[in-house]
Length: 136
Image (cartoon, rainbow, N blue to C red; front, side):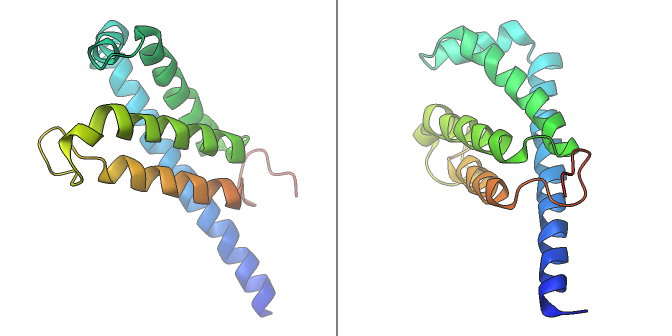
């Protein structure tokens, strides 16, 4: 096996690991907004931050559908970039006032920004070989 073949295989494996794990996390976050906080509660939280309540519904939909798309490997590059924007918005509006450390009360901006960086890296990797929508 050549170094190039091994590197390509590692990139496909890395893409799959990042795609499925971040997709699962997005899905869980969206479902938590849906079933635990409820759509109305999520919209109310967004309003408490000075944002339109409709943005809470949109975020919930992006997290659920985006999570499923990432798990399946559908439009990974675009979904990842959209997810990075959602995460940067969460960091800015929901976590910056709490400081850097995510262990701070209310959670600081460390985790959502790190997660956004992971999503940008995933946008460069793309679907990978092991996706439902593999076009290789």
